[in-house]
Length: 276
Ligand SMILES: Nc1ncnc2c1ncn2[C@@H]1O[C@H](COP(=O)(O)OP(=O)(O)OP(=O)(O)O)[C@@H](O)[C@H]1O
Ligand SMILES: [Mg+2]
Image (cartoon, rainbow, N blue to C red; front, side, top):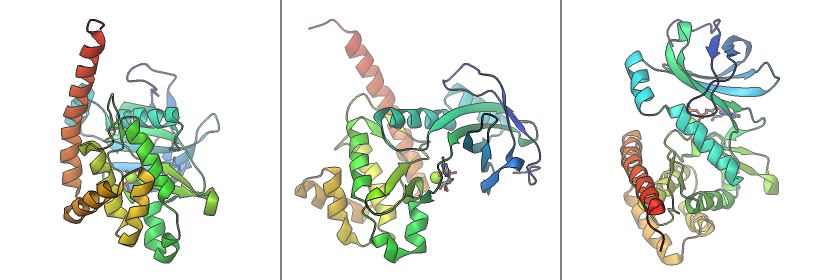
């Protein structure tokens, strides 16, 4: 992020909890917190807000043109904010959203950001599996797959369901799975179990888990998701042919944007139609 290596400047943001509407401006100070991730165009840090809340802030720098494009369509952080709100309302564990915002942030440039409540004691599932595969094999991942089943039944598609986008906390029977990072989230007005949308979520998750875990675990995971034996055999065959890539994630994201929009329009037309 050019010119921000010391993070000595503050970011003044109008916090939003809806697409529009402003609250009192909040002054964010990356230099008072802990930097969690820094890449060209991305800065993630943890900081204590003025009201005492420990927050994680994800800031994405956008060129002016890209920012204008997002204004006309949607900002990734708005989509992610809404996704987290949906998960919260279903009672599923996620990184609780605080607010999002976009605009011009002085020396940080044009961009958008998302603030979430910091959850202490979490580790990314991918990091745990990579650091200690033997310990990873002892984790019971069935509850994670049951959670994904509940999401799909509620019409929600995570969109970037990779092992690095699942946090874990605690151990044994108290092990918790926490979902995060949903910029490509979709909501359909019907359950999506058995559809392409659900299948891609499951493929991405299985694909990243099987980099560290044995394929023998798959039937248990799919059983927890709620697949019959026949569905499991078909899924395992599809998975062998599956090739994960960021390009594929982008492409199916665009396809499902169109499908979700059409589904919502169809649903609205049907709901507005004559009764009976
Ligand atoms: N609310 C939170 N509480 C605790 N840790 C968090 C929280 N939000 C994010 N993190 C940490 O920051 C990391 C990156 O977050 P996230 O996956 O949302 O961003 P990202 O830019 O998409 O990262 P990546 O591209 O590596 O997936 C997480 O793996 C986690 O370690
Ligand atoms: Mg992530």
